[in-house]
Amino acid sequence: MNILVIGNGGREHALAWKLAQSPRAARVWVAPGNGAAAAVPLASRQCPISNLQLSTTDPQPLVAFARQEEIGLTVVGPEAALAAGIVDAFQAAELPCFGPTRAAAQLETSKAFAKAFMARHGIPTGSYATFTEHAAARAHLRSVDYPVVIKASGLAAGKGVIVPESRGEAEYALSLLMVERAFGAAGDEVVIEERLYGQEASVLAFSDGRNVVPMPPAQDHKPVFDGDRGPNTGGMGAYAPAPLVTPALMDTILREILQPAVDGMRAAGTPYVGVLYAGLMIPALAPTGNSTVCKRGAGASVMDTRPKVLEFNCRFGDPETQVILPLLESDLVEVLEACLNGDLDRTAVRWQAGAAATVVAASEGYPGSYPKEREITGVSQASGLPGVTVFHAGTRRSGAGRLLTSGGRVLAVTGVGKDLPLAISRAYEGIAHIHFQGMHYRRDIGAKALPRDLHFSGKRSLWPVS
Ligand code: AMP
Ligand code: GLY
Image 1 (tube, rainbow, N blue to C red):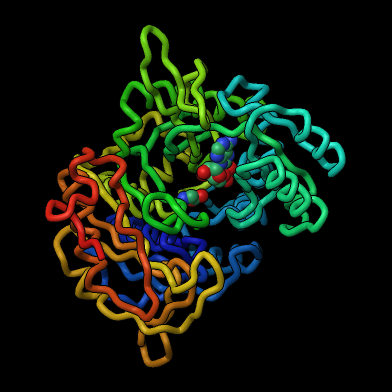
Image 2 (image 1 turned 135 degrees about the vertical axis):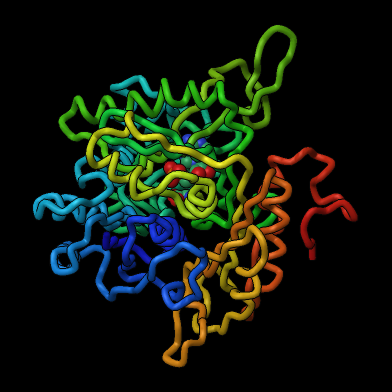
């Protein structure tokens, strides 16, 4: 089977890498792809991976290519491609394409839609109000007595959420979105949401429109610096499974969040086929006497301890995919086809025991502006280590075949091992071989999940600390 992956990040390299290991895969194209394509094959049973210079948001050339090359399965990576109606165009051409339609992808592309949907279906999430008028939004802000988060409703490349520390900052955020239109049309509608506290987790699930099969829970690391400091990024690293999401909690998440979401979308006539990614806040629990309190800002109050949805994404996560897919034992082609055929309940989705961690190597200055075209060395040495896989994100090959940086997040180095400490130490061993000028990465990926005496503990440190 010929396979097409749409996108150019680390997530898409991980998808191509896993799909290429299917015994049914003959050739995998990635449009437009990155510097990974010409790399030495990363896995022994792997078919060739090639780049295809086509836009991710222009459906017709992709459809024409898929027809011409008899592509048997197309997989959409980024949300912008879903919003551009790639899946709808492939469906109209009767070509198999994995991902939600533009209507179903509104769960991600419109935060106002997602919040109203959750309210209708009783899916736990923070309380909220939506506004299209700046004056009304500001009046609402002045009327609430709890901390809030300000969100552009539309797609803003992951930058449209502002978590203000004061009312003044919240007012500034509103004016940035609605008056200055910093994110253009994405901020024409704004969601003002109750701020939630706790630990975040990413629970992704396959859906065939009716059945839901969760993947191992993961945790992303969004702030750029160690200890969750500094500005938010697309994600500086991840690990899975996240022990924070216990099996009992996973049952609750399936029953109260994922299944009602898929049922609600089907009832609305927009069945959800694809990966549904719930970004969750798990309350930080602290028992006091007979009651359970939730740490909340400066004080603490008795409150709802259920996991709540911060956002839905309609696709695989980046960098979550780089830790989830290395744990998938089953053939990804079979799983995605089962979603498209509506028989996920008759397909075994098996995961290997153990854990995976990924550390992102970022360009100097990222998440602000950054230079490109810096030469990268050490990728093949890192990839040669046991349990280490290097996924390319912002990389490209020069005419002479040299590997150069071309984005903010450059590489994701994944370690897999029998447990999380081994996975983490393998990822850090791998990244230690890699170099490009100005490269930076977090040294504490996965630390939150380890016993406290293993955190930054000098001689006992599990990874190199500079
Ligand atoms: P989103 O794109 O909606 O997931 O938001 C991006 C990030 O903003 C999340 O990963 C959280 O760190 C933060 N965030 C979003 N909504 C809330 C909320 N209601 N309370 C606290 N933090 C939030
Ligand atoms: N890791 C965050 C995202 O994929 O949206």
